[in-house]
Image (cartoon, rainbow, N blue to C red; front, side, top):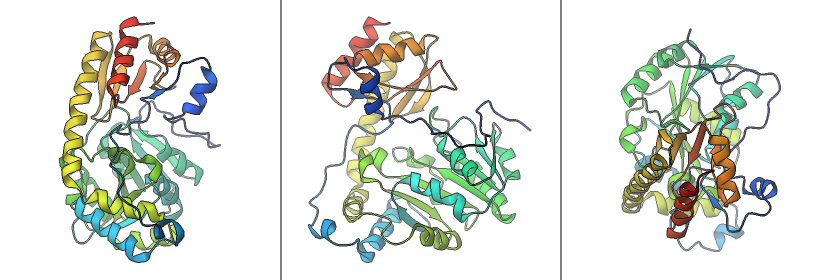
Length: 343
């Protein structure tokens, strides 16, 4: 058995650290000049332009037909096969919280150092969670979780390998969960178009690629046998009316997504060049974030914060920092200056 270094077992659930905690950064660095530049979240700085939202979206309960239209649009946007059911919810985090209550499991595994909320949610349900470094070993668990592309290092497992693993797990009554929160700009890496009938559940995030995390919208794609209890567990009105309206329009706008993907790829290359010049080693990432390593990463984190730039640090990997690319010329200027000054 090959187990990676990430601590995945524990008795009492502890809060999982996340990016985006500008409130905490302001408390720790009260004299930092505003405005802060938040590069810690992996959310696109290019937000989808909000369409006109009918007043009824705010004043009435969310409409069932609007939910159906949104889920149909998501199935089309993600190229889901006809047998795959789509369940919309208030962000992928909602599904991560609910899955352990819907799928009984005693032994769960994640692939590698990854998004910690998965392990935390299954541990809270009473399951044992192991962190494995070998994809094939995931087959031996009741539930296996692969974040693809991985957060924070951008590791990608080819869809054909995931499909084969999912089929094997499905034949044994087990489940492979593939979290595709960062796959929108690289759809060729998505498992969804190749999903088998059973054995796999895919998660898709809306807010990251479309730059609207506050909308709280995400999707689970799975078999009908799993979609029904998952939808029942989440209850009625699981997606707010404004989110239904915005999501349906945005998911149908393939041209906007392609343009944004091209811009983000260019921004990631530009960020890599700045980091290399400052002495960082780029470990990996996606077009929405870059993972960099430096022996003085803790000093760099504080150096950035003093200058009003928030990055993502990792207690388990103290030499790592994760940075999203800036979204404006002024933000690029401030980041470049901070990298030139050095701690």
